[in-house]
Image (cartoon, rainbow, N blue to C red; front, side, top):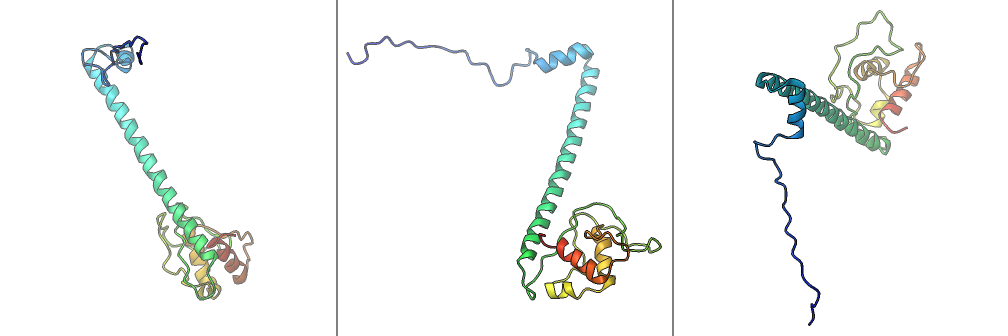
Amino acid sequence: MLNSAPHYVHHHAYAPLMPPPSRPTMAMVVVRMAHGNDPLALDRRFAALEASLSRVEVQLSAASALQSVQTQAQIARVHNTHCAMGDALLPVPKTEAGHARPVFVASSVAGPLPRPVGSTPRQFPTTRTQLLDLSLRDLKKLAWFYSSSFGVHDPSATRHEIMLGFLNFVQLS
């Protein structure tokens, strides 16, 4: 006798994945306790929950889109860090919403309209050589675009100081 131990068969009653409609769930019991059996109150409560879920989905989608843009910006900065003078730079997408005046731009100067997060400026230099040759006017346009002073805190900063700040902005420092 190879298998002399008695063999017992256990029959388990498995609960269905979804309870039958005649059997209320815990969530339904809680809602009924709070709102009674009024179907209109239940409908309003479920509509409010659906609206809340929709808001969370929108927030999650926006956060995911921002994360994607931030990842693209990081990839561009890594690429730009390893570029030689004549190599093509990758434009860094805008990651900050809004429109902040750069510290080195006079308060009497009106800025351009803000651009959306994820966009890139038309005047972004295509090579490191072009970046080093940017005019003060172009650097100020880029600062307006990115809503950034590129780490420059001096309102009377020179073109060279702003250019070095922008160089650090477009690559990993």
